[in-house]
Image 1 (tube, rainbow, N blue to C red):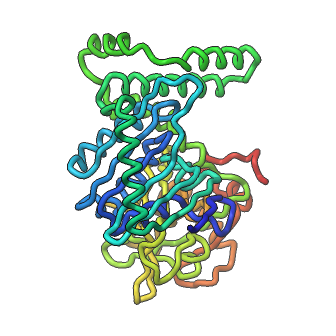
Image 2 (cartoon, one colour):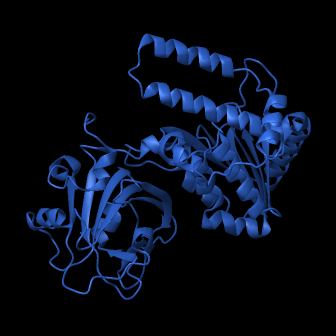
Image 3 (tube, helix red, strand yellow):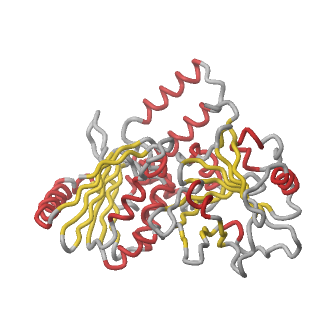
Length: 413
């Protein structure tokens, strides 16, 4: 058995996300059970290249609890995944009727031709649980006999749990998801207020009210009266992005956050595949030269309008020509500048392999300020300047960067 610690402040941090997508390689069948799931967490696992390759021929059964965090956006994402990989992915919602008990497992297993792998720990199927929370997990390699016994126990538990396993489109699942969403809206709304005792009392009463089972008949009647079902692509999706994304608070800049300001080379017609020097590739982004696809680097683009775009999951790529690169969605569809001026990428390290970034083109509001910052510090490269800072060194001089909308200037420890 191998034991790992996930801690975004720990230089040897190992991500549960990367353990899972490595464990599925070569698998023939697998399963997993998680207490909570979020939209981003679901996509990080199921939409990863390794997992999609596994699902081409393999089968995976996923059990997700509905006790608390799993909301309407999680369920919609699960439905989309199940429809997309319907022949190879089975997803069930776990809803029990036991008071004072919580569905709380967190593990996945994969059977392989010559044995199997069990990944078990404290992390849920959320982006925080997979990469950002302080978690611990273990990877157990199983012999053919051990995986056979494990699968037998899994199958027996599934049979026993049949009364508690529901299809994602059943009314009871949607009612629980709606309840969890409403609970989160209320908590967030109260947190945004001044936190008076009255607010705290109201929050406790509301949570107590929601602690029981939802009224399924009332939910079904309301759905029928609506006539059409709301989609997460409508205006509610904006509410999700700003308020109901349980992983969103992680994407925060602090005064001691590391920042890389980098001029971006043209590098042919596909300059969205941004090349970096070896030092930045390894010592800032945390990749390892020569190990293609082993790590997953997460990028999240901050638009100039202050909106944080979807997470971009990128395997690290290094090639024999000593180019070390990542693809950036923000550069797609943009023409490279024709003059001497180059695009600038400003990358903020959120954890060892997770980054927010803003892409600046000549003429953008913050572009000249960033050039002045680059001009004020000597670079080890005269061709493409890639200079590292701490946020506190440059955020006031580059105040028009939208990235600083995610700055918490009170937390500088």
